[in-house]
Length: 143
Image (cartoon, rainbow, N blue to C red; front, side):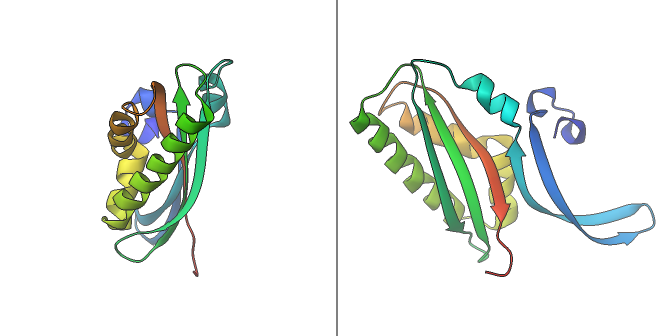
């Protein structure tokens, strides 16, 4: 991702493309999803902190089915109630955000972090969080 946009801070994200057609030196492609490198995720997780992870299959406004994996990392160990509340609210906000937008716009917000920053701002009122990251997304084809 860092090579495509020139943003070095996004180099841990890999984006999957499907090439639809080639015209000379130009290729038009479709985004199939993204994934954060496993090394990046493992560097974020530390002892004495909670990791809340949810995996959802969501439908976008243009009726594409997307599987999304989101994690929230806390500053300190959370109680089970706080973990459940954070997970529930995170799932609810992801569903609302993806349902309202077409796939192209939703995928851009997931990849560039706009969606996760909106979720982070709301979730920090529930529990002290260090980071919220959408680490993986895929378009489920034929469904």
